Length: 376
Image 1 (cartoon, one colour):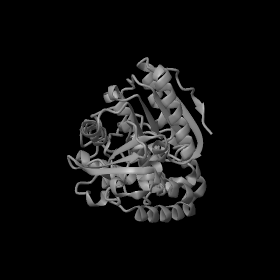
Image 2 (spheres, helix red, strand yellow):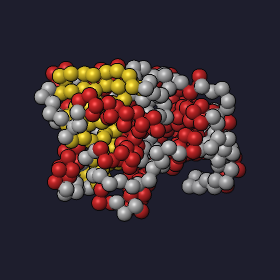
Image 3 (tube, helix red, strand yellow):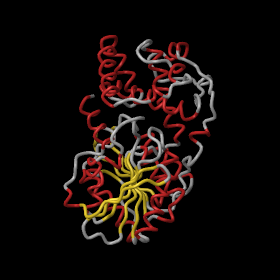
Image 4 (tube, helix red, strand yellow):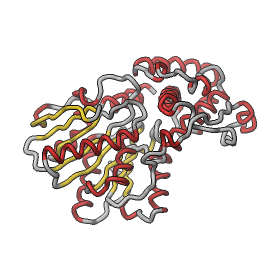
């Protein structure tokens, strides 16, 4: 788990610093409470990438606009002559609707100050990949195409419900190791929704020792049920807990209801259904998940890139659900899925990112759809 989680942390912090040789100018500031950063490469000639970052734990530092390591993630775009504009969003944690709106506000600022770009793409990782898809669905007229990577591309409610069911079923099989859902969604949990990455890692390490000591075979079987490697299960649980705490604060309660859910696929389905914690929703899911809900109605080229293994957004949530929605809309001509053999959340090499982005650019320019499939 250590290697995968360290890579995941690197993605959250946006990698290793890039030589300033690529950077000609940086514009930073605040728009309606959201800090932003715009980076111009040497010899910039009017090309723009709007970049949407992924989920950040509540209270984590440094934010995107102040983090020099952010440059590694956007290096493939800077190298290709694109300016990159990124918003911090006005809130941390689950910031899906804010990310869509505030990325669009930043795009408008860019156009007003620097002029309309001759080419523009929307790009993002993880939750930012979901923001990328939502931007193409709602503001696609301003872009030549979208490049979501390891994206939250399912309906947000369904994606976060996975975290709810993960913890509910884990607690039924391994009682006492994790907080109950009732405690996670209890009132006044704003402080508990904030966590430093080192603290989350420490808790995950302690949970792993306790879990494998109690029943390693059951832990492996349980992890497999959620498309996880056993070593990744503890951090996935920690991540899910803090996402749910964040959701509880922002929605004013619990937006999920599992009183009618029949859980299956476990070694003993009867046992888990009799033991699992049942909660009725105490807040309207529309409060937090309704705005910019996924539709699959895309009208611009989209190259979606995913790894074959992802401990936070498995392919069913990152690819399959969205592909089905696009197909239902009759818009498959606008979607190409590329996959890598990466073994972790957003574990793409810069070269893979650059190659996939080049295929999107060629598609947008020529009108010939990019070919789906494996990318080395």
